Length: 197
Image 1 (cartoon, rainbow, N blue to C red):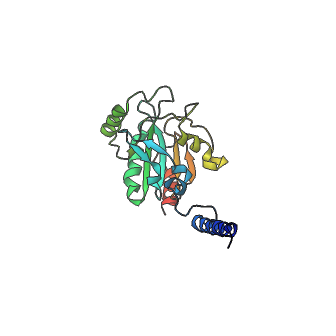
Image 2 (spheres, one colour):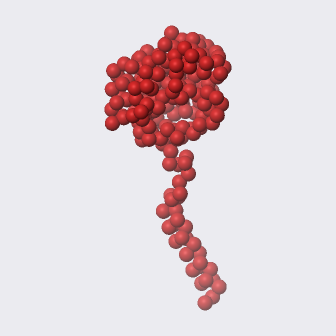
Image 3 (cartoon, rainbow, N blue to C red):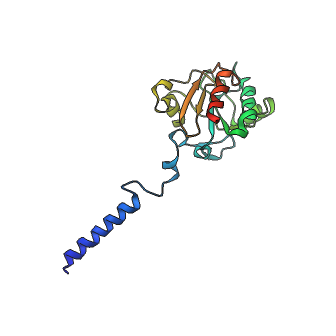
């Protein structure tokens, strides 16, 4: 056999092997990022400054809320904790993201925010570090959420503190609730129950 023939044969085997390993161009061994739903494909800092991969919430129903300590809606912390207590064992996870974007109503540090919401409202759901939810410095998670997660009907800016985004067990944004809609309102609890089934 000529060298050229051997080289061609070896290249052919390599191509076949590559095709088999990648399943037609898609890697068989997916990275966590590629197997993570878009809505959860973000790394965020929690209230204690530790990095959290939101993909770890995959398989749960997730309610994302931008929160503030000095807002007329701040008592909604109580309703959010009531939701947490009622549905956590069934697979609901509430993620609170403090933001100082509306009239400076979240001026505190992470440690101050943590102390406030745990002592005044007994919050036990997951709290994260302060982020920006509107404007040029908007956090990438909120860029995704305000774009409707790919659904134009759900797209729109964050109107105020305590806007709520519901993500189903498959990691898809399925509903957005007004800041003024109380966490324990039937509109929200029925939507959560539907997703928990």
